Length: 150
Length: 150
Image 1: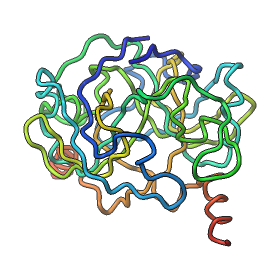
Image 2: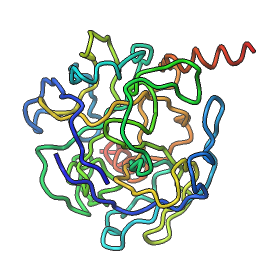
Image 3: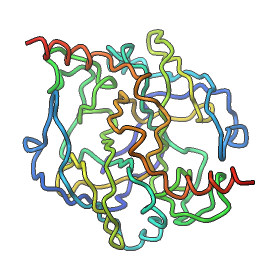
Image 4: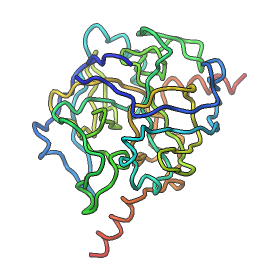
Protein backbone atom coordinates (compact mmCIF):
# COMPACT_ATOMS: atom_id res chain seq x y z
CA UNK A 1 0.00 0.00 0.00
CA UNK A 2 1.12 3.62 0.35
CA UNK A 3 1.03 6.53 2.80
CA UNK A 4 -1.44 9.16 1.63
CA UNK A 5 -0.11 12.72 1.65
CA UNK A 6 -2.22 15.82 0.93
CA UNK A 7 -1.56 17.41 -2.46
CA UNK A 8 -3.43 20.49 -1.20
CA UNK A 9 -6.58 21.60 0.59
CA UNK A 10 -10.15 22.60 -0.22
CA UNK A 11 -11.41 26.15 0.40
CA UNK A 12 -15.13 25.64 0.87
CA UNK A 13 -18.07 27.68 2.16
CA UNK A 14 -19.04 24.67 4.30
CA UNK A 15 -17.64 24.56 7.84
CA UNK A 16 -19.50 21.47 8.96
CA UNK A 17 -21.33 18.51 7.43
CA UNK A 18 -24.77 19.84 8.37
CA UNK A 19 -24.31 22.72 5.91
CA UNK A 20 -23.71 20.47 2.88
CA UNK A 21 -26.88 19.85 0.80
CA UNK A 22 -27.80 16.17 1.07
CA UNK A 23 -30.57 13.81 0.13
CA UNK A 24 -32.83 13.53 -2.88
CA UNK A 25 -32.75 16.48 -5.20
CA UNK A 26 -29.70 18.04 -3.48
CA UNK A 27 -27.66 20.08 -5.92
CA UNK A 28 -24.05 21.08 -5.55
CA UNK A 29 -23.60 24.55 -6.96
CA UNK A 30 -21.28 25.90 -4.27
CA UNK A 31 -18.09 27.51 -5.47
CA UNK A 32 -14.78 26.87 -3.82
CA UNK A 33 -11.07 26.64 -4.45
CA UNK A 34 -8.73 23.67 -4.72
CA UNK A 35 -5.45 24.99 -3.37
CA UNK A 36 -2.55 22.85 -4.53
CA UNK A 37 0.78 22.80 -2.66
CA UNK A 38 3.36 25.14 -4.23
CA UNK A 39 5.83 22.32 -4.90
CA UNK A 40 3.20 20.42 -6.95
CA UNK A 41 2.01 23.36 -9.11
CA UNK A 42 3.76 22.02 -12.23
CA UNK A 43 1.41 19.03 -12.04
CA UNK A 44 -1.46 21.35 -13.02
CA UNK A 45 0.04 22.10 -16.45
CA UNK A 46 -2.70 22.04 -19.13
CA UNK A 47 -5.49 21.40 -16.65
CA UNK A 48 -7.23 24.60 -17.86
CA UNK A 49 -8.47 22.78 -20.97
CA UNK A 50 -10.77 20.48 -19.04
CA UNK A 51 -14.24 21.59 -18.04
CA UNK A 52 -14.71 19.01 -15.30
CA UNK A 53 -12.32 17.41 -12.83
CA UNK A 54 -12.43 14.32 -10.66
CA UNK A 55 -11.39 15.20 -7.13
CA UNK A 56 -10.37 12.57 -4.59
CA UNK A 57 -10.17 13.73 -1.00
CA UNK A 58 -10.20 12.52 2.60
CA UNK A 59 -13.25 12.35 4.85
CA UNK A 60 -11.01 13.71 7.60
CA UNK A 61 -13.85 14.48 10.01
CA UNK A 62 -15.35 11.01 9.82
CA UNK A 63 -14.23 8.10 12.03
CA UNK A 64 -14.70 4.38 11.52
CA UNK A 65 -17.01 2.73 9.05
CA UNK A 66 -20.28 0.84 8.91
CA UNK A 67 -21.06 -1.83 6.33
CA UNK A 68 -24.78 -1.00 6.27
CA UNK A 69 -26.16 2.46 6.67
CA UNK A 70 -29.22 4.56 5.84
CA UNK A 71 -28.24 7.46 3.57
CA UNK A 72 -29.92 10.90 3.66
CA UNK A 73 -31.62 10.05 0.34
CA UNK A 74 -33.55 7.05 1.62
CA UNK A 75 -35.18 5.60 4.71
CA UNK A 76 -33.79 2.11 4.11
CA UNK A 77 -30.30 0.77 4.80
CA UNK A 78 -27.88 -0.05 1.96
CA UNK A 79 -24.36 -1.45 1.75
CA UNK A 80 -21.59 1.12 2.12
CA UNK A 81 -20.26 0.30 -1.38
CA UNK A 82 -23.71 1.09 -2.82
CA UNK A 83 -23.70 4.56 -1.20
CA UNK A 84 -21.49 7.61 -0.94
CA UNK A 85 -21.42 7.41 2.88
CA UNK A 86 -18.38 9.03 4.56
CA UNK A 87 -18.09 6.07 6.94
CA UNK A 88 -16.15 3.80 4.55
CA UNK A 89 -13.31 1.29 5.10
CA UNK A 90 -11.00 3.75 3.28
CA UNK A 91 -12.42 7.24 3.93
CA UNK A 92 -11.90 8.56 0.40
CA UNK A 93 -14.40 11.03 -1.05
CA UNK A 94 -15.10 11.52 -4.75
CA UNK A 95 -16.52 14.68 -6.32
CA UNK A 96 -16.79 15.86 -9.91
CA UNK A 97 -16.38 19.65 -10.05
CA UNK A 98 -16.60 22.15 -12.86
CA UNK A 99 -13.36 24.08 -13.39
CA UNK A 100 -14.20 27.79 -13.59
CA UNK A 101 -10.66 29.15 -13.84
CA UNK A 102 -7.10 28.56 -12.74
CA UNK A 103 -5.00 31.14 -10.93
CA UNK A 104 -1.55 29.63 -10.53
CA UNK A 105 -1.92 26.86 -7.98
CA UNK A 106 -5.53 27.79 -7.19
CA UNK A 107 -8.33 26.03 -9.05
CA UNK A 108 -11.62 27.90 -8.78
CA UNK A 109 -14.37 25.32 -9.11
CA UNK A 110 -18.14 24.89 -8.87
CA UNK A 111 -19.78 21.93 -7.22
CA UNK A 112 -17.85 21.51 -3.97
CA UNK A 113 -19.45 19.30 -1.36
CA UNK A 114 -16.35 19.07 0.84
CA UNK A 115 -15.76 20.93 4.09
CA UNK A 116 -13.34 23.84 4.51
CA UNK A 117 -9.79 22.52 4.94
CA UNK A 118 -10.43 19.04 3.52
CA UNK A 119 -7.16 17.39 2.42
CA UNK A 120 -6.94 16.63 -1.30
CA UNK A 121 -5.54 13.30 -2.48
CA UNK A 122 -5.72 13.58 -6.26
CA UNK A 123 -7.13 15.46 -9.23
CA UNK A 124 -7.78 13.77 -12.58
CA UNK A 125 -9.42 14.95 -15.79
CA UNK A 126 -13.04 13.84 -16.08
CA UNK A 127 -13.58 11.99 -19.34
CA UNK A 128 -16.96 10.37 -19.25
CA UNK A 129 -17.56 7.66 -21.76
CA UNK A 130 -20.71 6.28 -20.19
CA UNK A 131 -23.83 7.60 -21.92
CA UNK A 132 -26.39 8.60 -19.31
CA UNK A 133 -29.15 6.62 -20.99
CA UNK A 134 -27.30 3.36 -20.22
CA UNK A 135 -27.05 4.06 -16.50
CA UNK A 136 -29.06 2.15 -13.92
CA UNK A 137 -29.17 3.87 -10.55
CA UNK A 138 -30.37 1.06 -8.28
CA UNK A 139 -31.91 1.84 -4.92
CA UNK A 140 -31.48 5.56 -5.55
CA UNK A 141 -33.85 5.51 -8.51
CA UNK A 142 -36.36 3.60 -6.38
CA UNK A 143 -36.04 6.09 -3.52
CA UNK A 144 -36.58 8.92 -6.00
CA UNK A 145 -39.67 7.25 -7.43
CA UNK A 146 -41.14 6.76 -3.94
CA UNK A 147 -40.35 10.39 -3.13
CA UNK A 148 -42.06 11.68 -6.28
CA UNK A 149 -45.22 9.70 -5.55
CA UNK A 150 -45.71 11.55 -2.26
CA UNK B 1 -4.77 11.20 7.03
CA UNK B 2 -5.45 7.45 7.16
CA UNK B 3 -3.79 4.11 6.49
CA UNK B 4 -5.18 2.55 3.33
CA UNK B 5 -6.21 -1.09 3.64
CA UNK B 6 -7.33 -3.29 0.73
CA UNK B 7 -11.06 -4.00 0.66
CA UNK B 8 -10.32 -6.76 -1.87
CA UNK B 9 -8.41 -7.55 -5.04
CA UNK B 10 -8.90 -7.42 -8.81
CA UNK B 11 -8.98 -10.57 -10.92
CA UNK B 12 -7.86 -9.35 -14.33
CA UNK B 13 -6.67 -10.90 -17.59
CA UNK B 14 -3.75 -8.44 -17.54
CA UNK B 15 -0.53 -9.61 -15.90
CA UNK B 16 1.55 -6.55 -16.75
CA UNK B 17 1.03 -2.95 -17.82
CA UNK B 18 2.12 -3.63 -21.42
CA UNK B 19 -0.99 -5.77 -21.95
CA UNK B 20 -3.45 -3.00 -21.02
CA UNK B 21 -4.85 -1.10 -24.05
CA UNK B 22 -3.56 2.47 -23.92
CA UNK B 23 -3.49 5.62 -26.01
CA UNK B 24 -6.00 7.21 -28.36
CA UNK B 25 -8.95 5.04 -29.25
CA UNK B 26 -8.11 2.42 -26.61
CA UNK B 27 -11.22 0.67 -25.39
CA UNK B 28 -11.64 -1.24 -22.16
CA UNK B 29 -13.88 -4.20 -22.77
CA UNK B 30 -11.96 -6.73 -20.69
CA UNK B 31 -13.96 -8.69 -18.17
CA UNK B 32 -12.69 -9.31 -14.67
CA UNK B 33 -13.78 -9.81 -11.11
CA UNK B 34 -13.68 -7.53 -8.09
CA UNK B 35 -13.18 -9.92 -5.18
CA UNK B 36 -14.21 -8.29 -1.91
CA UNK B 37 -12.88 -9.55 1.44
CA UNK B 38 -15.34 -11.93 3.16
CA UNK B 39 -15.64 -9.68 6.23
CA UNK B 40 -16.79 -6.76 4.05
CA UNK B 41 -19.39 -8.63 1.97
CA UNK B 42 -22.32 -6.94 3.76
CA UNK B 43 -21.07 -3.65 2.32
CA UNK B 44 -22.16 -4.88 -1.13
CA UNK B 45 -25.85 -5.01 -0.16
CA UNK B 46 -28.02 -3.57 -2.97
CA UNK B 47 -25.08 -2.97 -5.30
CA UNK B 48 -26.75 -5.21 -7.92
CA UNK B 49 -29.10 -2.37 -8.86
CA UNK B 50 -26.35 -0.20 -10.30
CA UNK B 51 -25.17 -0.70 -13.85
CA UNK B 52 -21.84 1.09 -13.41
CA UNK B 53 -19.45 1.34 -10.48
CA UNK B 54 -16.61 3.67 -9.59
CA UNK B 55 -13.59 1.65 -8.55
CA UNK B 56 -10.66 3.19 -6.66
CA UNK B 57 -7.52 1.09 -6.51
CA UNK B 58 -3.77 1.25 -5.93
CA UNK B 59 -1.14 1.52 -8.65
CA UNK B 60 0.86 -1.00 -6.63
CA UNK B 61 3.40 -1.69 -9.37
CA UNK B 62 4.28 1.97 -9.90
CA UNK B 63 6.93 3.80 -7.87
CA UNK B 64 7.41 7.53 -7.37
CA UNK B 65 5.76 10.30 -9.35
CA UNK B 66 6.52 12.87 -11.98
CA UNK B 67 4.80 16.24 -12.21
CA UNK B 68 5.10 16.39 -16.00
CA UNK B 69 4.84 13.36 -18.23
CA UNK B 70 4.01 12.36 -21.79
CA UNK B 71 1.00 10.03 -21.81
CA UNK B 72 0.48 7.19 -24.34
CA UNK B 73 -2.24 9.29 -26.01
CA UNK B 74 0.00 12.22 -26.96
CA UNK B 75 3.57 13.14 -27.90
CA UNK B 76 3.59 16.20 -25.66
CA UNK B 77 4.06 16.44 -21.89
CA UNK B 78 1.19 17.37 -19.59
CA UNK B 79 0.82 17.91 -15.84
CA UNK B 80 0.15 14.75 -13.85
CA UNK B 81 -3.21 16.12 -12.62
CA UNK B 82 -4.28 16.60 -16.25
CA UNK B 83 -3.56 12.93 -17.05
CA UNK B 84 -4.36 9.46 -15.73
CA UNK B 85 -0.65 8.63 -15.30
CA UNK B 86 0.13 5.92 -12.71
CA UNK B 87 3.09 7.99 -11.44
CA UNK B 88 1.06 10.27 -9.14
CA UNK B 89 1.77 11.80 -5.70
CA UNK B 90 -0.90 9.45 -4.28
CA UNK B 91 -0.90 6.35 -6.53
CA UNK B 92 -4.69 5.95 -6.66
CA UNK B 93 -6.30 4.62 -9.84
CA UNK B 94 -9.86 5.33 -10.93
CA UNK B 95 -11.93 3.14 -13.25
CA UNK B 96 -15.63 3.07 -14.12
CA UNK B 97 -16.72 -0.51 -14.76
CA UNK B 98 -19.99 -2.04 -15.86
CA UNK B 99 -21.44 -4.47 -13.32
CA UNK B 100 -22.39 -7.68 -15.13
CA UNK B 101 -23.47 -9.71 -12.11
CA UNK B 102 -22.80 -10.32 -8.47
CA UNK B 103 -21.99 -13.71 -7.00
CA UNK B 104 -21.74 -13.24 -3.24
CA UNK B 105 -18.57 -11.26 -2.66
CA UNK B 106 -17.51 -11.47 -6.31
CA UNK B 107 -18.48 -8.65 -8.67
CA UNK B 108 -18.19 -9.69 -12.31
CA UNK B 109 -17.48 -6.54 -14.28
CA UNK B 110 -16.60 -5.31 -17.76
CA UNK B 111 -14.05 -2.60 -18.42
CA UNK B 112 -11.13 -3.54 -16.19
CA UNK B 113 -7.84 -1.80 -16.92
CA UNK B 114 -6.14 -2.91 -13.71
CA UNK B 115 -3.56 -5.66 -13.39
CA UNK B 116 -4.18 -9.06 -11.81
CA UNK B 117 -3.97 -8.79 -8.02
CA UNK B 118 -4.41 -5.03 -7.84
CA UNK B 119 -5.55 -3.97 -4.33
CA UNK B 120 -8.98 -2.32 -4.21
CA UNK B 121 -9.53 0.78 -2.04
CA UNK B 122 -13.18 1.57 -2.60
CA UNK B 123 -16.29 0.97 -4.70
CA UNK B 124 -19.00 3.59 -5.12
CA UNK B 125 -22.14 3.75 -7.27
CA UNK B 126 -21.62 5.72 -10.48
CA UNK B 127 -24.25 8.45 -10.75
CA UNK B 128 -23.25 10.74 -13.55
CA UNK B 129 -24.93 14.11 -13.59
CA UNK B 130 -22.63 15.74 -16.11
CA UNK B 131 -24.16 15.70 -19.59
CA UNK B 132 -21.53 14.65 -22.12
CA UNK B 133 -22.28 17.62 -24.37
CA UNK B 134 -21.03 20.02 -21.67
CA UNK B 135 -17.64 18.33 -21.34
CA UNK B 136 -14.41 19.88 -22.56
CA UNK B 137 -11.58 17.40 -22.85
CA UNK B 138 -8.55 19.73 -23.09
CA UNK B 139 -5.28 18.43 -24.51
CA UNK B 140 -6.84 15.04 -25.13
CA UNK B 141 -9.35 16.45 -27.62
CA UNK B 142 -6.47 18.25 -29.36
CA UNK B 143 -4.36 15.09 -29.50
CA UNK B 144 -7.34 13.21 -30.95
CA UNK B 145 -7.88 15.92 -33.58
CA UNK B 146 -4.19 15.78 -34.61
CA UNK B 147 -4.41 12.00 -34.74
CA UNK B 148 -7.50 12.03 -36.97
CA UNK B 149 -5.87 14.43 -39.43
CA UNK B 150 -3.05 11.96 -40.13
